[in-house]
Image (cartoon, rainbow, N blue to C red; front, top):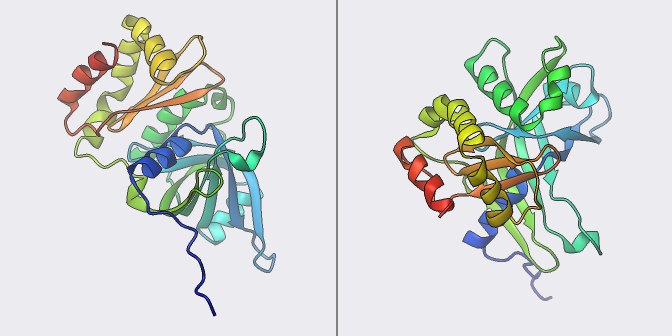
Length: 247
């Protein structure tokens, strides 16, 4: 009997970058969790996606929803990102991340940070983000499966998706002021980042997130991710990188 063929390719830097882009540029995704009292059936729903400074996806959900009750009963979840384009939907890349869902306490510093970052990414969520039944979960990645299109399947580890830098906390503290400065005083550079580096259409682009690995940009409808060549190790590196990107 012939051995089973291994359909996975060796995971390389190109695959890791594609996976990070599929995850971090997603506005929403499909979340699968185990529905309580269903005999183990998965329940799938669409959720808005934000990110913490270490690259972990976060979701804002109501305690009245099925997926929240599911995550509180069993923290295992999977998140699918990657939008189909023209033609065959299966020819377009997508990423499935298996996660451990961690509820974020409302009175924690983590909640304050995540709330601020989420609202910049999804401004319309301001209508309900502070309702008493709404709260955040961090979806801590455990492993991931990347399908880059036909014949391009990869297995990834949690560290392949993480933002790893000693500057995470310091960047988080200065993120809001840096974003306001760029969007107010250097809007021409922001437009350049979106249209040149991210190949986006012309629009009213704004930076909505800065972390050690890159920038998140939005025109109110689309989200684009601009990854740095290498993650920032010190906050002093941010300004030179932003200037270089506009050079």
